[in-house]
Length: 158
Image (cartoon, rainbow, N blue to C red; front, side, top):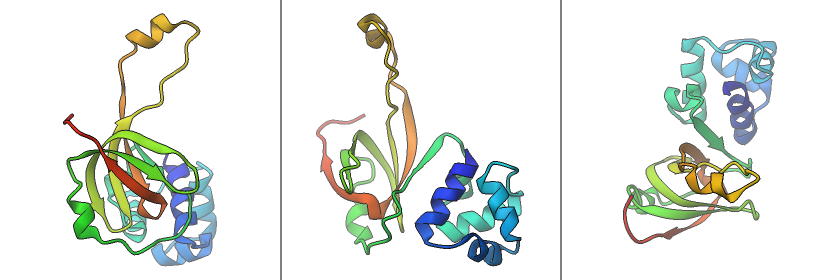
């Protein structure tokens, strides 16, 4: 939901609700309401928020795109090297023991974010019969580069 994304993105940026409100020309209460799911920003304000947080309007508004950030702060990255990973399948290791995203297709690398397509967590059913027949669902994730520890490139193609 956009409310969850707005809260995570604001915390990642280290900004207060008042600072975000001032940056886009709304009240602090409006930011609070959006983060609590009590309304959503109009298109012009959503575009300003996307610009403020360094992502696309589609990434902000699309419920199919998960934002993965642990709010660890930004580190400088050498993007020309990372851009060479676009189109590769990798295991992306996350910081502070948060785990890894396995078999992730790297779709794009930008300032502050890496866009991945990876397997959705599987539902757990009482019998293995259902697990075998369950199709693998792929999801889009926008991962904070500050939370990426490393990449292990996998052989083969998707």
